[in-house]
Image 1 (cartoon, rainbow, N blue to C red):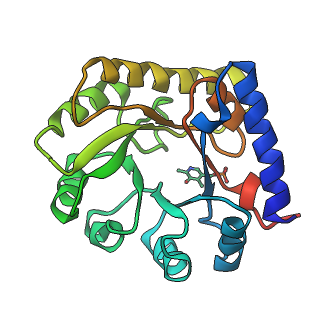
Image 2 (tube, protein in one colour):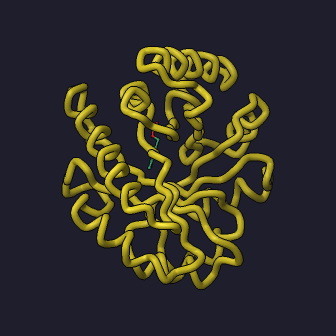
Length: 225
Ligand SMILES: *Cc1c(COP(=O)(O)O)cnc(C)c1O
């Protein structure tokens, strides 16, 4: 199926999820995760009007960036190795996966202007998931204060793989509550307005729980049927 057709369907679902909870669809940024797909498919997505692309590896980002440049905004959504920071730092709009101080230091050192970061939190506390525990996340954000090129725009999480809507909802709600706690600290470098949560399987629930960014791969740009 063409990306344009999938985009139309996803957009309808976003509008419907927003309507349910009285939110405006403009509050939700749609990020097409192109990590599994070809450069041609990513190009098709941009031509269909998608403004934001997400990649989880520096190679994937760089090879697509060579072709698409700054036409879309780039989001780095995967574990970022410290030594790879310099390759991507001047190409990306957001890093969704800030999860350790050494990474923050490297970003701070390499950046020429403040970088929009989201701190990755492991709300579900699954062993397999990356990210800080909610307890540690607040302390971590406080420690970032001296790093003048780090701006904490919000939080990111990945929900557990489950069909159980209540588990998903609790996870997203937990991230929102943590975000609210951080906002209350009124840290100048951590406005923390963004909630990056929701993927192909769970984005409508994430939007109902306040997502401001959804990261959708398979359902939006998947090359299958
Ligand atoms: C792959 C990936 C996604 C998109 O996953 P889909 O289930 O294909 O929508 C979103 N976020 C992160 C961090 C990912 O690695």
